[in-house]
Image (cartoon, rainbow, N blue to C red; front, side):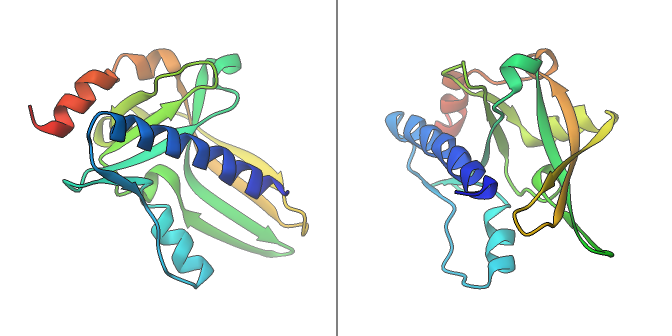
Length: 171
């Protein structure tokens, strides 16, 4: 399995984990899915959010394999694809999302860090931009651009899972 499929499956595992958390708390919700067959349109639709609740609250779920070791998370905002002399830049991650909340999972933590997307954008507004490079099996270069978010900073703004459920229920 290639890196994209590994990463997709790894991310999908945490999306399902968060979906199960919502459903265990009687929040009717489902994964973002589409019947779209055009690859690029499909990726655009799927990249806007991961889960939607019955009251139209959208949630983006992220997991970072290295967050425990590094004490930080990488928040993607753009993606560049380079093939030979051609380069394409796409909005992605935080710059493309329509989600109301982000839920971040660290590998050694059972509960997610949940944060309002507007607050996350505000926190990251003045942080330093980084690029991470990946070479595909076909020889293309993919550069993921984003912000490094220290977990300590994230913790100052997170919503406890129980409080999040209360918000969703409107109690």
